[in-house]
Image 1 (cartoon, rainbow, N blue to C red):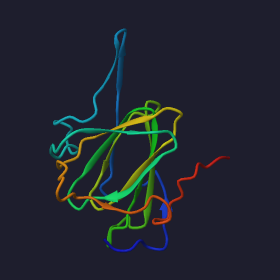
Image 2 (tube, rainbow, N blue to C red):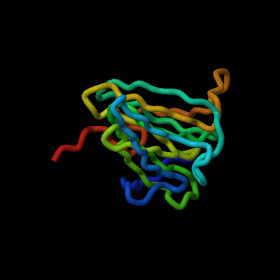
Image 3 (spheres, one colour):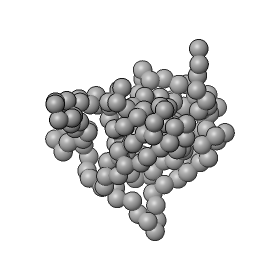
Length: 165
């Protein structure tokens, strides 16, 4: 992975190359609700199945930064709210230097496809713990993880501080 370029731009209007989003529909009835996240027949979105897991994050906690060389992630927040942030440091990428922010959760049900080689992480931004479901394309390799980490603060040009105003 090359070092990050000096100039970065935060945008949610122009997605990083390879990032795909899908609005999720919540179907409520008198018993509760159902939300489909990722289907095998999601044309152009579904790639392959590796595993499914859920990650709980406590309010105000940042889980960042890492990328994968091979794995593609598909994130949806099914409880609470998170700010998912992606940083494109890929050498030669048409969106090199771009930063995307996505607000995911019950107030904005959405699936986000995070391509390999793109740094990503999230912060729980609600008053309750958040639950993020991931459907990655590869199963986790315990003895040789496809995971390349940086510290969450001060390593990439992104400030996790809440922006008031």
